Length: 169
Image 1 (cartoon, rainbow, N blue to C red):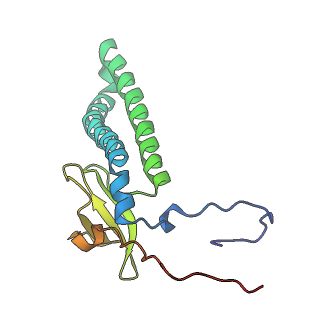
Image 2 (spheres, rainbow, N blue to C red):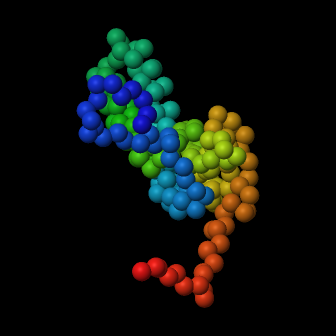
Image 3 (cartoon, helix red, strand yellow):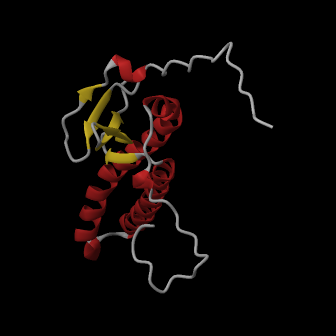
C-alpha cells in the first residue's frame, strides 16, 4: 500500500498511482492514435490561450474606458478562456487515465512510462513523429533513439512436444 493508512476503513479502495504504471513499447505504439488525438486537442488549447490571454490583458487594462462592444468582447474572451482551460483539464485527465504523462503541453511532447536499466523512464513522442522512436529517463530532457530490439515482440515460448505430464494417483 502507498501513503498514509491510519484512520482508513478496512475495506477502503486504494487506486493505483497512474505514475506507477509501466508500459511496453508495443502498448505505447498501440495507444498512439488515441494519444495523438488528445495531444492535438491540448496543443490547440495552448495555442488558443496564447491568442486570448494578451487580448484579455489589453482589455482588462483598458476596462475603465471601453465602449459597449469592447466590454462585450472582454466578457466573451473571459468566458472563452474559462472554456478552453476546462477543455485542457479534461484532455490532461484523459492522458493521465491512460497512464501517459504530458512532458511539454505546448509542443505536445508526451511520455509513456517505462523502466530502462531499473530506472523510471519514458518512451516519448510528439506530433510530427511517425512512431514512438525516442525514450528518455524521468527528469532528463535528452531523448535517445529507441533501439530496434526494443520494438520486437519477444519470441514465443518453445512448445514442449513429446513430453507428457503425468500425475501420480
